[in-house]
Length: 171
Image (cartoon, rainbow, N blue to C red):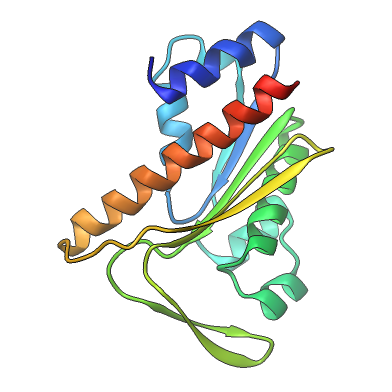
C-alpha cells in the first residue's frame, strides 16, 4: 500500500476526518489522499494557503505569529494545522509551510532579515489534543528548479501523510 492508502484505511475504519492547510506543497497532500477510493469519506476540506494573507484569512494564522516567527516556522505550521482542522470540523489537521525550490528565502523574523535555506519545511499534525511539529531539511541539491520543487513537495507530502497516519493509529 502507498502511505495515502495506509492513511485512508484507518481514517475510514475509525470514522475520522482530516483536513490540510498547505503552502509549499500546493495541495499535494490533499491530491494524494483524493487519489484513493473512499477519500470523500475522510477528507473534510483542504486549503492551499500560499500567501500570508490567505493563511490569516482562511485558517487563522495570527499576524503576530508571522511577524515574530516568520512564515517559515513551526509556529505557523501549527496554527495552520489547528486552523484548518477547526474551520472544517475535522478530527485531524495538517499544516505545511516551507521553501520549495532551489533558492533560499529571506524573511523578516522579529524585525530582522533571516535566510531560510531552500528545502526547509515545517509540518504540523494535530488532533486538537496532541500536536506534533517537525522540521525537515530537504536539500534540493543540484536539481533543476522544477525538479527541485517537485522533490521537496513529494518528500514533504509523504512525511505529512506518515505523521497523520501515526496520529490516526494512536486514536
